[in-house]
Length: 62
Image 1 (cartoon, rainbow, N blue to C red):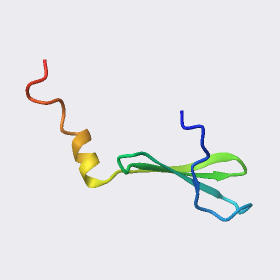
Image 2: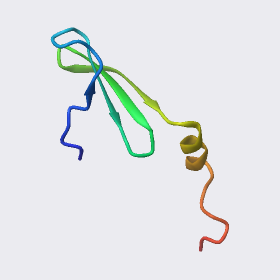
Image 3: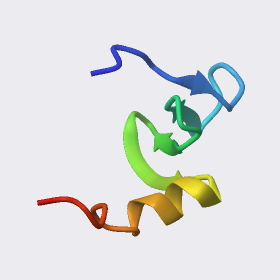
Image 4: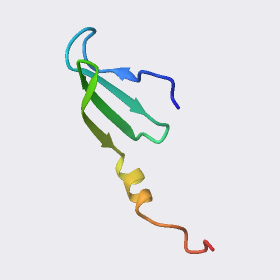
């Protein structure tokens, strides 16, 4: 969907390779790759985005 390698957080040619993708709302996913394989990932959301995700539908929703 993004057609992007994200933002590189690790130095060029260092192992593990670490990349971060961030959306317009400030949420991001950080992925760690060792020898081209995903070994760890984390999802970070700003506090207001996390609260909105658990709020459920609006009261006037059908």
